[in-house]
Amino acid sequence: MPAEGLDHINIVSGDIARTVEFYEGLLGLEARPIPVAPEGYGGRWIYDKHGHDVIHVQLHDPERHGARDGQPLDMGPLDHIAIVCTDFPGMCAKCDAMGLDYSTNHVEKMNFSQIFVRDPDNVLLELNFRNG
Image 1 (cartoon, rainbow, N blue to C red):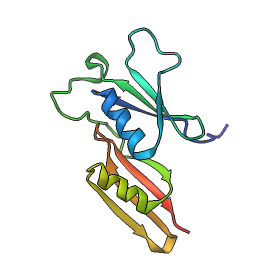
Image 2 (image 1 turned 45 degrees about the vertical axis):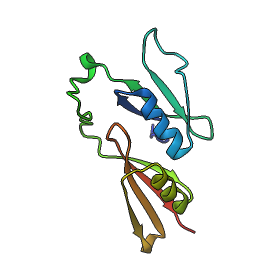
Image 3 (image 1 turned 30 degrees about the vertical axis):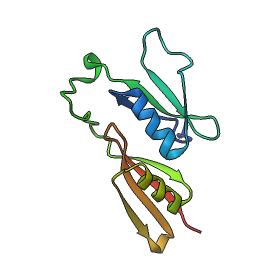
Image 4 (image 1 turned 90 degrees about the vertical axis):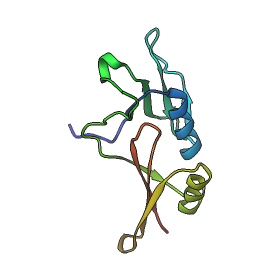
């Protein structure tokens, strides 16, 4: 059977509150406790406006994820996460207000704009905007 779409992404974080604050603040998502988390499991699920848990954030576990040594986690082969967004100028203003370092790209032939920004755990986000 074919895949039907992306279910969620999982981000390993050394600071759950900081990561949650970033995604709620930048993208207007809503974090909630994990409904089926085992005792002592650190993390949150972050929901989109439709109530889908699209980002799972879990606490860094040195046994499972390796040592941090004060550095961002090596995300391995993960290059970026692409998210469909609206209001390109508004998102640029929000990035500015949050003091985020970001870059933009405009693909005129496709009437398409992008913002590239990193989250607190060094995950690259590709925010995609369909113009028009």
